[in-house]
Length: 368
Image (cartoon, rainbow, N blue to C red):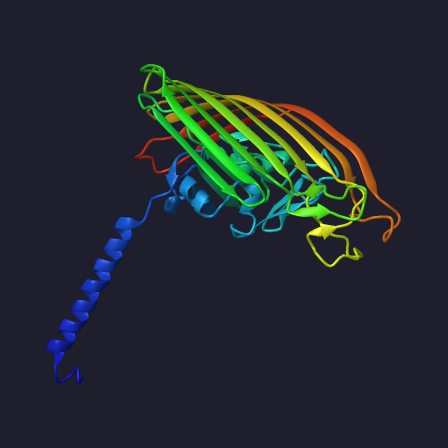
């Protein structure tokens, strides 16, 4: 078409394109879900948060089959999680993190928080997600907000709080091969106008993917899992300005070692290995925390007090993954037991005036 000879037709075509494009963007804007995050210890829209953050809702976690922090590896830019020394994990964001777990006194470079509670033990990364509302992975130094253990970044997990005046229950069950079973249940119970309780339970079991053959342990399965997670919460909210949430949680895991194969293994099936030892790990983690929050016209005062008890026992870790018939010398670790208690206290004063031009935060951490 000669646009110079027919300017009216050209203008009509352009206006049609503009109207169609505007309609398309308007439709997209109407269906986009707004994600709220707490990367700055206050609720803000993901689009307006000045932090490199990846956020997952509960629905997004289910769609992506993300069951624990370990499953986030490869799904978040810059985040890698690799196994180290049995059930322990090495977490890095943009290459900065916990380089090794051999030194139990070393400080991790990526901090993990659950409902604002700092989780210092790498065993906590194996725990199954339970009644999660959202997960945020913050990339880059976060020391101003999350403390000294977040040079590489932070992982922030927020679970659903009890709700007043609303009874709610939910159950789901997933089954599969290898006797896979994943059962979850949640119930929210109002106890009055100012109190409510919420209880969530998760059980995850499966047989192993790998079998030991041609040794005295023939028939033993590796990769087995038996995990139990429970969390109970009690909410007291006497006024619109003040609320207190008391939480108690337990995570118990009984697993066999992961199926790995020595390069000298003469077998041809990667799921059939020759090993003369099988490693097992028992993890028993318990925690109690109290979160109190008071909203004022100009700021919010929040206190989080938490106690954690983590006991982990590893038995007969086979470091060489072999059998004396084709690999010597043998490297077997007998029993490694860790039992740690930690008490933490955090107090935050957070600005919340909507018309303020400056947002500010005053955190105070107390760690042993």
